[in-house]
Image (cartoon, rainbow, N blue to C red; front, side, top):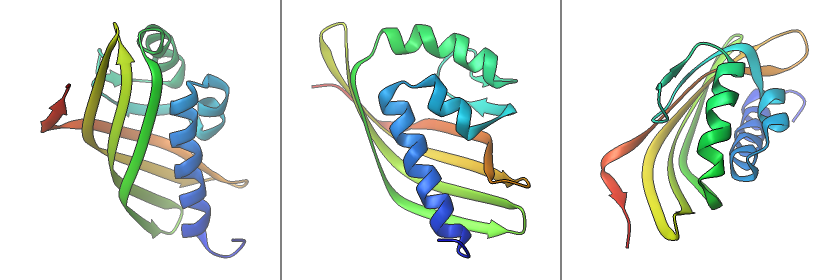
Length: 134
C-alpha cells in the first residue's frame, strides 16, 4: 500500500463509509480537511466548512436508526496530488419506525498534503428514481 495511492484511497473511502454508518464525527473530522465543501441532500445542501456540516448532521443523524451504506462501482482516479473517487450507494435506515432505502451517487475529492490524503469535497445525491420505501 505504501507506493500505491489507489489502495490508500480505497482504504480511505471505506473508512469514510464506516464513519457515516457509525455516525462518528471524530472519524469524519479525521478524514475531512477543515475547509471541505460538502454538497448533500441534507439542507442547506452546501456546507462551507466541516463545522457547519457537523452541526447540521447532528440533527439529521438523530432521526436515523440502523444506518447501513453499501457502495459499489467504485472508480478511483489520481492526478498528482488530487484524486477523486466515484461510486454508487445503497443506503438503508429506519426513520419514524419505517425502513427507508435510497440509491444514489457519491463523489469524493481528496488532496494530498505532506502527511496523507484529506477529503476536500463530497457530493452525494440520490438517483431521481432510486428512492423507495416498502
